[in-house]
Figure (spheres, one colour):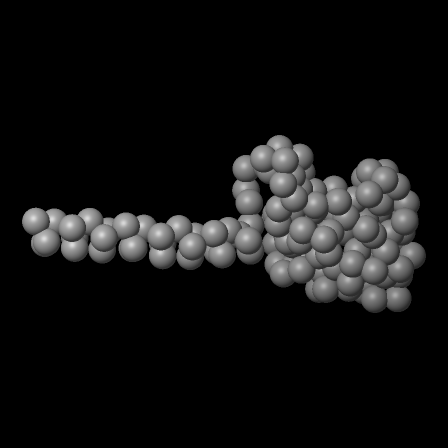
Length: 133
């Protein structure tokens, strides 16, 4: 009988420890399945107007004369407070992604994603096409 009680207490104690560790891990978890995606405040049209990447990057872009546009694709994390972190370059043939990310961080404010009525961290992939003419 004493052995059964000891085993039962051991299992109960271990479940409590596991539950506490999962809760602390979930605070910084990046959520993939969300109800409301992260987005720039004011929408994407206002976002594109504010950035004006073609003028901001005019001095840094060295391109062949036949190139009509530049495509840069980056992925970043939108934090719970709307800040942007952990940028990853997915496509960047002219090595300007870091400059683009810095401009986005400076000139835009983001609304974080929502999951189960709670604000969560989320990944966001942003393809950017910059017309050069």
